[in-house]
Length: 238
Image (cartoon, rainbow, N blue to C red; front, side, top):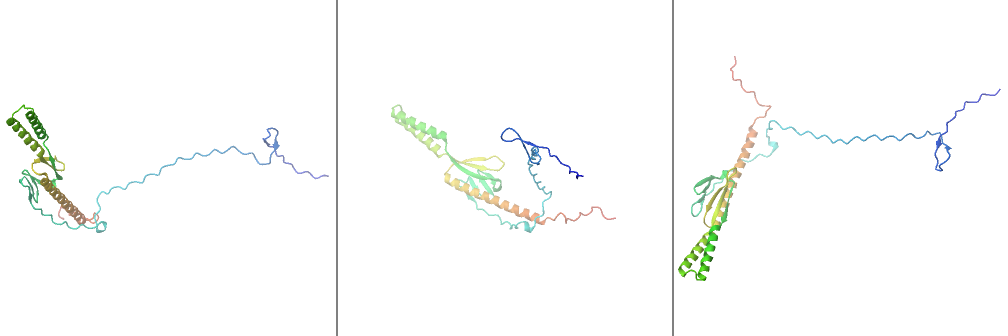
């Protein structure tokens, strides 16, 4: 009697398209490739969250020696000598500036400047008078005496216009600028204005130095918040 045959397993054939365009061939036992995997969507880039800003302190921290150098006591204020102009209309004293009888304290001023100006009306009138009378005399329209009088008047007006004046401007912070007109050489007025500006800057520097020193002293003498003792009770004990 013959032995039974082992069971057979049939592998279904797979058809593969070849480059010849016709026919097919049996493939190996590898399964056919599946459909291409769909790429996962890339999540959008998220911006980093901004760091929270530090909250402002409700009360300033007490100043200590390690927080900064200690300021020296301010030196005594500089004593200024009194300077006056030749006509006495401008005076620079230790307290302030006197201009045409008005007093300005150094600390209330921002600065002063002097600008020489010319009287344009005087220059024009003098020039036209001079050339007009001279032309009339040369054309025999006027006699010698009236022509000489007109030419002299024109020269006087021209000299007055060219001389002009010196305009002082007094600047005050937060207030309207004051203007003064003073005649005379511009060089002497400019020298006084430079000295006035130096004294204004010196007084402002002394004030700022003293304010910074006393502010630091006040912060150093202030008691810390945690060590502040409780205020005494206004009611007497029973």
